[in-house]
Image (tube, rainbow, N blue to C red; front, side, top):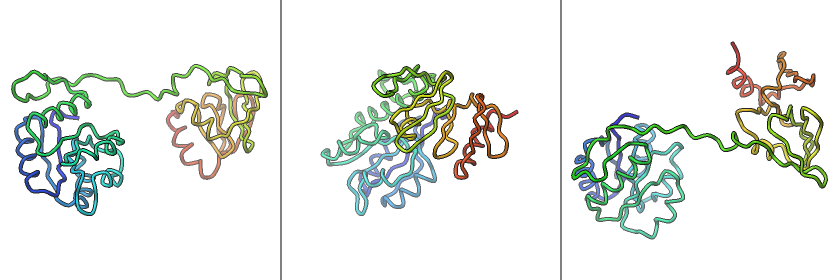
Length: 257
């Protein structure tokens, strides 16, 4: 993202367009892409223009702000809700994209506070004590989010009445048998009452690959691939499912040279 943040406004009231346009023009690092009175038109414009910030009215004819956000494909821009009805705030905050809520009539101090919240969430460094809005100078360096499953060292998996400690690297592949799983480990085979979907939700996605409805394999346990047939390090041969083949091959291409 550049140091300029792009904005779009959707509101069915003319006074809101006048006020919000004026406020946006006062902030040197905001670029106004446009505005819509009609939420259906706004839906098309936001998808086409992909602004960083969306100012969105809650109560509009034919489509509320909540309905608008439900209709807008992900990823959403960061959203600042603007409305005269604070009772709708709780529902709009169910969306991760909603960063702040402005109550009409909007004062410039409240507007600037909302912008500062957005810039902070986007990782910009801003001086909150500046007497006038100033352009962000340095964007803070943040590490990309890591899926928490990638950091799990082991699981406790139930077998009969015991809980067995299993690390992700212990699993060669998993074989589904209706409501049971046969886990082929490096040292043994473990049978547990669990669905394949549940196991897939638990495992680090970067280390495992679902190759058909009944089999999930650790990527580093793949010895060779011959057409649709995968051979594991322990000699097990498993066919790649037809509906899984495209995604499986796309993933495996990342390790091809």
